[in-house]
Image (cartoon, rainbow, N blue to C red; front, side):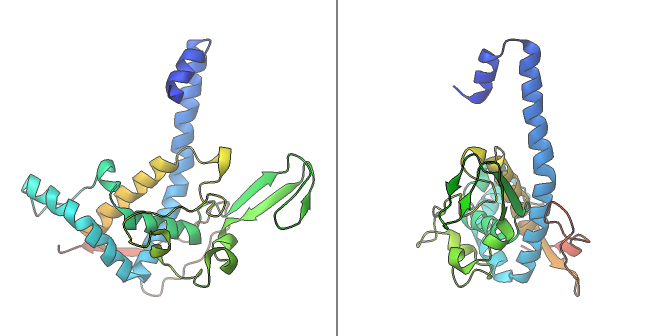
Length: 237
């Protein structure tokens, strides 16, 4: 039984069910808007600094793009990738995760201690205390990600043969939280961002303005202070 069926069959009134569905939908819309836009800004910034990554992504997109172009017969039009097609873009997925590792849209996570305990580090925590976790700092720790932790290297997310994503525990990669608090919109967000990035990279060249000073905004989200200023031009495929 999926969760929507569960809501409909266990709710006592129609109003309660509709209110719950409405709250869920609003949560998806509001929670995903600013976090995805923040992630995409940093992603295009990192891609502009790593043209070799763009080349690999375009090679991955090429078979699907060629198939779509031959099917439509309109080779001069833009290729628009859909959600189902994006599932095959493994390197693009790894690139997105690498971007989230270094630039998590929500850079801090707050947890409240449920009961007195001793953490794996040996620190004792007590009931009611608040623990602040810096996702931004975790993504740059050598003890967590290795000596090359400051490098933008999507390959770290791939299996040795490079054909699939390797498992990384959520307590190591907290961009979507962990355990029972895992982000409900994780899969939707990944799908949306992969289709946007795939479509942009296949059809356009995105160049960050020369001399652009990129700074962090003083915000709950890891936004760019003045946004990402770029030049976008048609790509010759």
